[in-house]
Image 1 (tube, rainbow, N blue to C red):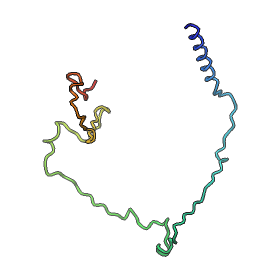
Image 2 (image 1 turned 180 degrees about the horizontal axis):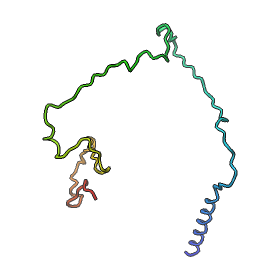
Image 3 (image 1 turned 135 degrees about the vertical axis):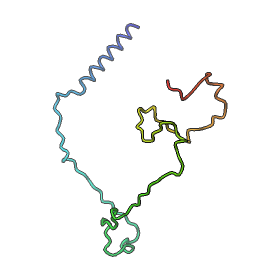
Image 4 (image 1 turned 180 degrees about the vertical axis):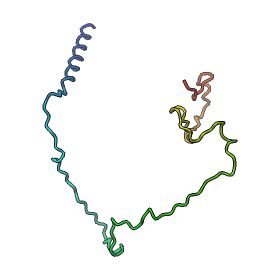
Length: 134
């Protein structure tokens, strides 16, 4: 057993020393010039089987902007509820409050609820609460 331990320790030490000297920063490296990369651009011609110019207006330019988004007038409406929501919310509720930590964020997803098909209480300890913080 002692012989195997010594052999294993010696092997691990050699691998560690080999890894230390594998990347020697004192060696000269070849300087890389990014402008030396030759970029080959393939021009792909797509044949649709018909001439698209027959179906486009005269003097059509695909790169010309025909519609100005700044000319759209937006209507701003104030949305107000006709009933008081305070009766349905907890005391001191602030919808714009910044959560203090990640654990205080509650996500409710309808797809999380599923039926197991048997009673799980028989397999769990008494007073088990899956949502209790530890």
